[in-house]
Image (tube, rainbow, N blue to C red):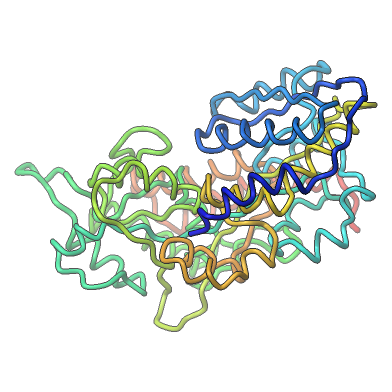
Length: 426
């Protein structure tokens, strides 16, 4: 799907953009992102195109391992070093703003009215204190990847449409050795992968517990309904035993297990399509996330990485950085990003393309965008850990789900309170 766009757009990018910068002094700006192979390769390609169009600007591209990324930013930007344009997870925006790493997007270059008209609704999570601080090229939602070969072997005739069917399918695909140890997981569980999002924005909501208040100031998932959702998820590990935490080591272990044919189903984002397409030998497919009941209200988690201007970008570098940022989020780049990385365009009119919705791999992700919610994180890493800890308390320490969830809610409420205490109510 859309691969033909690549050849067309590579040429279009060269021809369509204004040939600014000719004869101007050369300005060097720096762009940072974490290492994700397909994104790194594409950005190298985009920089070459940008520099052709803007010969007065040179872009230095640097990337770092994900786990070291925020520390590198914290060390460099306050010292006036590092990037002028930076790629960051949308959930880090409040932390980056409070730390003084970002400057708000200039409204003359990125009019808020235009952003809210052209982009999918979830990007409003990047608006803070009435300003946009960063803007995405692409967005993501969650879907279910399934191993079609394991489906056939286990006589699972179609992707499950309810979580009850999901559990039954997982049980049929789970294989164990003579000692009862799992050798193939029916469900590749990943609390620290995408499953904390699955819990927060999918299972809690489908079981009847909104995770937060409408103004994002209060944690509201610690209810009997929320505890039942957590119980269902953790019993996949403790009772049905169709998945094991860290079955394959590392944050991406669940995906590696799937690609190795050792997990029948995983919940993952559209960004995983490229890696799964390259690394999976078995036949596989993608389906929408199941629901609590057939025809019940769907829910999904939406997310995205954004590009922002750091406070280092000043004077001529700021002007060059703005041009590069506009290039990164242009319609042409969004089409290339879809083809090379597998992430969905952030422009509404592009994701509404019926050819994209009909694509068997992209379609399930596209169909979820209208109801996908991007959690308003004030400290994504800390809030993620709260739910990961809640799962571990139940799975490893046999704590009742309701108690684990109440403790998690208290910890997360403290995080929210500390953040909002710094701001005045609108």
